[in-house]
Image (cartoon, rainbow, N blue to C red):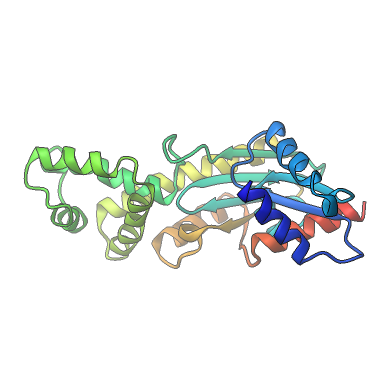
Length: 258
């Protein structure tokens, strides 16, 4: 109910006589049933009953901000990760983005967790230490095996705290830390698989990849190596310059003008 009230308020705040179409992108919309549920709830409101309301997952908004209704591949690399493409025929495909518990390869959470999983091996000598691992051992006050177990118990479901480690890893990569560089390369390989799958399954004239998300757009080793990998694979790369609200407006306009 709170969500529907918020959407009603947002729609009415931008309504104009010339507007008859509204595009809404919501993070938890994952199926046609979800879309219908939101549309039906909004249609119960008298002032919205005559509007053409389209509801999709919020990845559509972000893609619309980069490309409008046109073809292109959006790669979001933040706390989570997802690749979403629309081709010249209007076909769409989403790869990844299942949640941090499923992996979200190459995301900030994934990068952080990859480093955390190295710490037990470094602690008992199966892997060499580095300045990054030394810093994290000190940061998490790890002196015994039990401390490592306790660290994982605390962090396993703490999505944001684990994702924050990606900033530290990016900083240490700039200093040449081998753990940081290896982890970044592992993450980028996962992102490239996602982009390649979208490009393979859809039909593009000239595949363009637009990057969004805090990790993918932050200046540093991660962004540089990601752009290098995409360019090497012959993708044209750009950084998303508009926000999701702009994308929603572009998609609504395209639908209204059809």
